[in-house]
Image: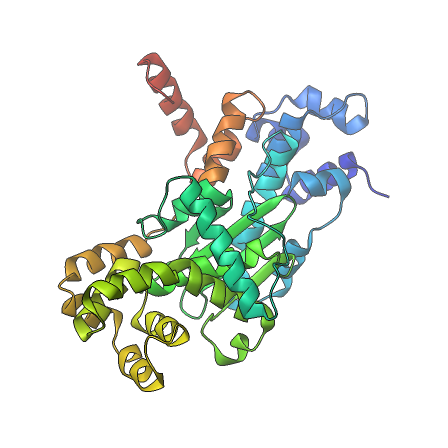
Length: 368
C-alpha cells in the first residue's frame, strides 16, 4: 500500500522537476521536504496544503490515496458537464483541505433530510417553508437581491458562478465536508435564480450524495425524477410563498400589468409564476397558458422595469467565486495555517503581487 511519501514522490517525478526545483517553486524548504520523503520527519499541514495546491490534488488523496467520487465523475464525464464537475471538484477539494486545517463548512440544514409528506412535492413544500423561516429568523428576505450571498449567510452553502455554456444549468455537490452550488453564467436571471433555489433544495434534502448534476432543470424527462419534483416544488415555494402572493394580488387583483409586476418583484419568469398561481388555484389552465407565454423581457416592459432587468442580466452574467471558501482560505493564511499560494490560486492572482498587496495594506494600517 502506498504511503504519503510515495504519492508525493510520484507527483514530483511526474512534474519532471528535481526535488530542489520543486521545493523552490512551491516555497518549501528542500532539506525539510527531503526529510519528510525519507520518513525522518512528519509532514506539516502547511506542507501538505502547499503540495496539494501545487499539484491540483486534494489533501485527502495525499493522506489516504483514495479518490473521492466527485473526482471520478469529473474524469469520466464529457462536454460542459465535465467542465462543471472539474470546477466543482476543485472547490470541494479545497474545502476538504480547509476542513483538515480547522475550517469546516459552516453548513446549517433546516430540518430532517427526509421531510414528512405523502409525496415528493409535499416534501419539497415543507422543506421550502422551513428554509424561508430560517431566512426570516435572520431578518432577511428571499426577495432581496443577492440570493447567492443570502444562501451562503443563512445556510452555509457555498455558491459559485462560472461560464459553463448553454445546455448546463447547475449542480449541487455534497461530500468531503463540502456543500456547494455551482451555476452557469446566464443571460436569463430568472432562470438562474430558479436554478439556484432548485439546487438548494437538493442540498437541503440530501439528494444524490456527492453530486447532483442538472443539465436542464426544465427538461420534461428530468421532471419525472422524484428528487427533481421535490427540488422544483422547493424552488417554487421558496421563491413564491403563498401568503405573500395572495397579499400582493389582494390589493390589485390579477391583470396583465399586476402579473408582470409580480414577475419583477419576485424575480421569477412568467412561466414559473403562472404555474405557481395554477397550483394555488388563482388561475385555471387557460389562464396559465395565457400568462406563461409572456417572456421575462415582456414582463419588464409591461411593468416599466426594463432598466432593473438590464442590471439583473449584467449581474447574472458575472463570475462569482464561492464566498465562504474565499473567506476561509484567506483566514487560514492569516492564521499561519497555510501559505499564501492556495489563496492566490483561488483568486487567480499572482502570489508575489498578492503578497506585495498584503504588505502594502499592512504598512498603511488597513485591513488586508
